[in-house]
Image (tube, rainbow, N blue to C red; front, top):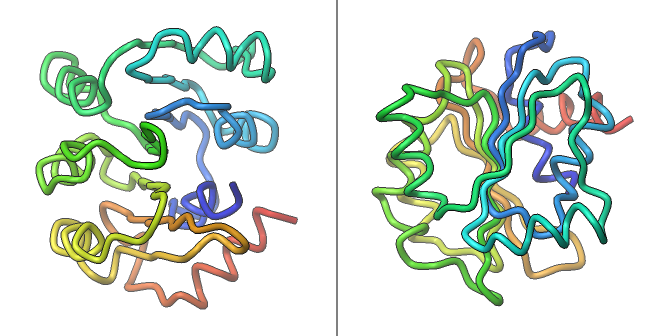
Length: 193
């Protein structure tokens, strides 16, 4: 969870109000719930997207995912790639934060691990937007593809302590200069305290 919301460390600092968040692959909704709890003053809108409509019912009724009165909330039953293509094409919608954890069992569908998906993710971000992708395991090809699309200096990655999961963080454009892992880690610590 902390690594997924580590994407906040890649946003322009100090944080600005009016952020738009897309959560692709809802599952339990722990990352967006954390954002709602700790960063709601900066977020105007959260869109939850999952290919399985029953996920929303489980996440809201059993796990506590909920809409907040001061944040516009949408629940969309759609494939993540299709949703981003429609949003970016028809509505020209861009997101400041995209959280992606689209697991089917213990794997991510192939079309969501493609260079096309990475390009659509980047296109779906605002000029200072960031994306966090939770992977069941490290895929070096996917990581290389991410670095190829976003630029090596704009991609950060780490294993999740005590789990096989791996997280890739990327920003569309570095806030001011190429950041080191130490710089990102230091900024992350200010958000997690």
